[in-house]
Structure formats: structure tokens, C-alpha cells
Image (cartoon, rainbow, N blue to C red; front, top):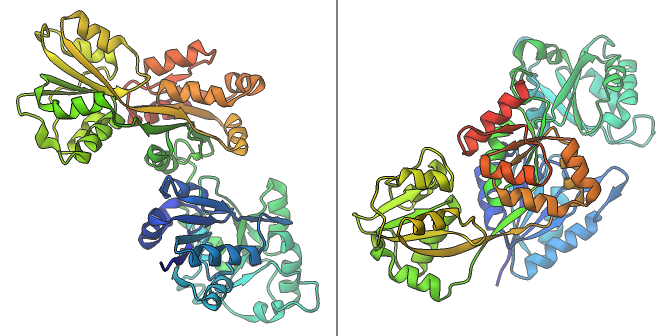
Length: 504
């Protein structure tokens, strides 16, 4: 079987800048070899069973050498696998993608290049700096600053670049910024020419300094702005104050927020938080595992049309119910029109709608007790009720229904398990401004990952924001202070509570 390797540009850091083609091949990959910068937020697009290999390079050290990376790509391609080599920015702009392509071609491995948005243009743009402007710059030059201007054998001719009109964009140059500036000034660039540095461009951590060619290094040092950064030298840098569009007025700008929900569900919440200016630490502490089919699930699928009420207590439950029906060649038509379908909240109702079912009842309070309240006045004695949900769900709903005389079939379709976490991400989370919890299981599982010191830091450090009263109660029982709770127990409600808490 013939494999293929896709050399994919991940873009500069904003996950929304990944191309449609890049997303397509990433979601289908058997293996993903990814870089350190600009790729973290995209890992949620990978298949759960995809092999993930961190080959990132950092100044002074590398997890794999370039030769080892080339060999790893060739090995997996020859084994017939679909491989994505995910690289920050564009693979052919100082990304060594061409070297990887040559190695694959020499080994006879089929490959494809998927270009990405380069930081040379996007990082300045996110800082309000156009690399060209009709009035001041009709061209731009991109150069690596990785070479030392003081060494005699370097390829970059800084004297020649100083004479080139237009904008000069320097990538990977922060470590040698002083020498670069001196070389350009010595060759004729005006020391007072506008210059800027944009660190972590396009991400929520982005910050920038606008100064002059002579003073940029000192200004960056004064505020601690370092790598990774894009340096822009030319008159266009002075336009930042007029064109800046990512201002600090965004309600979560400068704040770090932790998302603890399952990886497959985290991307939407992450995108919403980043749009509000937050830097997001994605720390999935739970994962959803379908429960293997057994007699109970088989009976449920066979008798799905016989229930008077079908109750779904989560979006996961809705997805799992219809996944089980689909495995048996059935779909929404297995439900009868006269059956009453109950969704615990709008997110669950949306998932039901995606499967072709309209929820007949959504309670005002999105908790088990809310469902019981919403059923007040409905005759339940002798009614056959299906409650399809997680294995570890609270008993209150089922007990309440049985207390009113209903014949309840409680079927566990999935369970939430503790997800392994990178120690570095855990440390990052403990230093965040806020931690969001979307269920009791996210609270319990995060605490399970922490030692005594970690739990103490969590209790004393970040603001705790909960999706609803049940989650809040679990957090308080664990010794945490809940600083904000969603009025509407949904993800939008959670975000609103987080924004209000930040404003206060």
C-alpha cells in the first residue's frame, strides 16, 4: 500500500489561519509529526487514534535532528501511512520543508506540499502593520536573522539589504537584533527609521513594540519582548498606531484561561475565548469512552419506539444514542411522533436536531431537577421512560421519575475517564488567571491529576468559573472557591460568567 506525506503549513499561531486543505489532511492523518510553534491548538483536529510525534526545535536543543525527522517521515511513508508533517508558518519559508521534500523524493515516497500563511506577513498584519503601502512601500524583503551579522562568511548581505527600498521583514532575528540594526545603519539605513517587533503574532499572547531602528533593541529589552518575534523595518511600522485592529479593549485580553473539557469538545470553546482576547490553555482532563454494546443497549435499540418519554441529559448522550442506532441500520425514524423527547439543555437539543429529532421539552434549569420540574403536571404513573446518559451520572433524575411511578430504563451509553496530561500544561494551568469547569467530572479529574501542592495552588490561585450549580457543588466539596457560575448552564453562559468575573 502506498503512503503519502503531506508537508503542511500550520500558519503563524492563530488556528483559524490553517487552510481548508491543511485541515482536511490533518483530520485524516494516521501520523502527525509537529513543530513546537503554531501547532498546539491544532492537535484537537487529529483523529484520536493518530500517532502524534513532537519533533519541535527550541533554541539550543532539538527533540529530533533534521536527519531524524527526514528518516521518520520516510519510514512512515514507506509503511503505507498517511502522514502530516505539521510546520509553523509555511513549510517553504525558512521551514526546511524543501529538505524534507528532497528526502522523500529520494526515497520514492509520494508527498504533497500544503502551503501555509507565513508569519512574515500575518504577524505584522495582526499588529496593524502592512508590509506594503502605496504611499510608503511598494515592495518588501523577507530575510532570516538567524545568521550573525558579525561573522564574515554569512550568506546574508546586510549592506545590500540596507540599500533595497521598501520594507525589510526579519524572521528569527531577535537574538541578533542589535547586530542587525548596527549593520543596517552602518550601510545607510537611517537610525531613526520606524521599526517594530511583534512577538507571538496572531495568538492571544501577541504583543508588539514600535520604535526606531536604533532604539528597537533597547525598547524590546525594557519590556522583555523576545523570541519568537517578527521584526519589521521601514516606514510601514509607523502605521501601527493608525491601523491597529486587535486592541486591548477585548474583555479577556491579557488573561489566560484553562479549558478542561474533553479534547473533541474543546475547540469551539477555545475559539470563542480567543476571539475575546484570552490566551487559552487546553488541558482536557476527561475523555469520552463509549460503553461496549451489551444486552442492555441491545434491548434499548430494539425497543426505542416503545418508550413514552426519551430523556437525554447531555450532548454526548444524544450522539451516543444515535451512534448505537446507526450501528444497527436505524436512525431518527425509529422514534414515534407521539413520543416525548426531553433534552436537558439547548446544547443537547442542538445535537438532537443534528440527528433529525426535535426536542419536545427543554427545561428552564438545565439540571436533573429542572427536568423533574418541567414534567410537573404530566401523568408519569406507568409511563415507560428511557434515560440515556453517562455511567457516572447522578441518581436524582431516575429516583425522581421512579418516585412518580414511572417505569425507568436507565441505560449508560458512555463513561468519562481521566485523560493523561502533559506536566507542562498542568503547570501552565496552575498559573492561569481562570479555570473553567463544564461538568463535575472535569473538577474531579483535574484534582486527580494534582498532588497536594498542586491542589493547594489551584485552590489559592486561578479564578474558578463553573457551568452550573452541580459542578459548583462538586468544586466546593473539593475545597475550591467558585468565583463565578453561569446563569444559563451552557457554554455561552459559562463564557458570559467568565467575562463578567474578569470585568469585576
